Image (tube, rainbow, N blue to C red; front, side):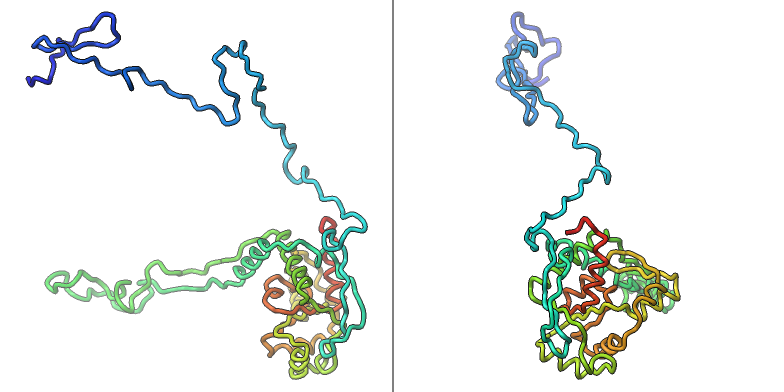
Length: 357
């Protein structure tokens, strides 16, 4: 047995001490074993809870601490739609920019003659709203995602034309082992892990987010001075639909790009609503209306049809009915041109939301 190993029978207890001493065969005494750091057992420290009063060395019923014990915060009440509180209406006489009041703006005669002919109030719920850039970003992302077709597809090795025979022997050539030429490792072979089926990128977005984003971009256009209200499109553009007259009018007004929103409903949208399920679904707030009633209420006007025809071959100009106004198109064009009928239609649409101001 080595000299540094002890026999089990040589370990004896030392009276008067908490440790055991080991005595070797040579009769020498070994050092007592350390029970912990610095010869004393280690104590487990308890972490004090954040915000709790310091612990007192006295018993709880004799503690000298005057700090009251911690209590749970009072409940906030019932959560859910019933517990939500509506914001109070704006005070009378408050500023329009803060209280959501109507904003007066000039009304121009037509696109061909930008001459002020009057003043009209714009609804404050649309043109005096807080600008939420985060909601605008979410809405644009949602619109672009819904536009994606999701038809990207590749051919796997089973769909590629080619023989399935082994291209070379397994051994003897000095090259890597290979099977069919349709393998993804060869040129002209299939694609591994590529898109193979139709994918849907569309997802749902809350209607309140869409409304807030539309209000934000309309308010931003008014604040930047890029909003125009007109009574008509002018002679030569409406009815006959002359593209040259429209381009000359935009050049005279120094419009680089313009989105023209008409108050009438598009004929294609109206026909689809009347021939289909009989309902036209709004693209902004998802409200459906009867297609036949909409067709009877907004008959085709010659100048509106001519305006759409004139702007068909002009890329910087886009014409939309008021039912199709959206955040992406308002941001995409520099100028926003609204007819008086479009302003009235937007006011009627958002008047039913009493909590907006």
